[in-house]
Length: 366
Image (cartoon, rainbow, N blue to C red; front, top):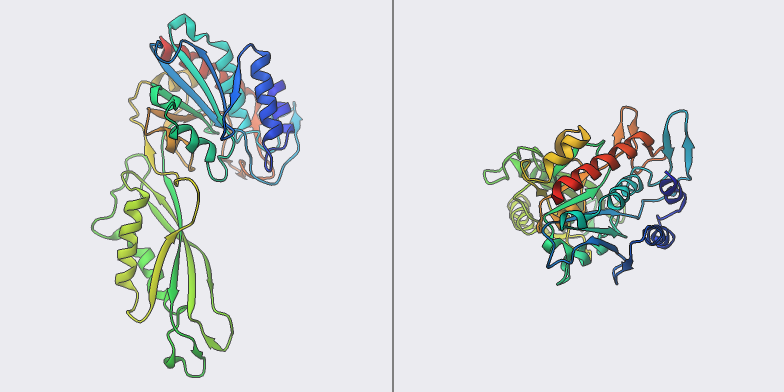
């Protein structure tokens, strides 16, 4: 737990530099060379060369955390470590590191890559760069294990997340003569109805066997400038949680058509995704019967289920069977844990995750 305590003690919500230094120092202290690529990813490899490896497993998680920083606190009476990142995702990182050091891939003629990204909580610039390179380690991986708080369950799917803004355009007028203008705020009524009915259309994605139904949620609204004026513009932000096989491009095209049919002809309507330098995290799934699943679920004793949050596993699943696994929980019976002021991880669960990962790694490399 020495690494985990020091990791949680190092704030990484604004600058991952100190946390990255700790990770590199820990790898090198254990005899493993590490490099930091141009995107800030920490990469370390054990075992055979890529072209000679009979099997290749990639281990991934992230070192950034959300704001604000929550100081480290260890409670031995309750057997927990508290503080920002304790479960998301420095606890999972600790377990992955333990297994990475414990298993020698050379025994099996295999290869294990550790790839730790710096920007998961915001734009996933590290993960996107990792999979975009011509020599991406995901291309040769037989399996990818992504460390996140899953309560030791093995997660084989997750919804995607897209975000965009609907802009409605009308015409200003005096509120005393509203019929002389076009009220963009009033046009929200058919737009909200269109949002409610979007997933009930005939060509909507079917209910996914693991993830259930997609959701579309209005989240932020802005409109109007004066209390006595018909507003000429209104903006509504929506959050889309997709399920396979829906893609960002497919959602965009279908949603725009749906909106245009719903909005009156005298109101202009536009929809655009929130601008970002990396692709949105798409929905992804791995066959629950994929070889990576059973060894890990048997070793951990956890269930096989979907993950309930968006994750960088979305980027990796296109190249190799991918699962999400780790100690800690997103929420417990009392409420939110990850991203919350009371974030914590059970010490015994970190040890259990490390043992399960070690056992699974051996099985996957054999």
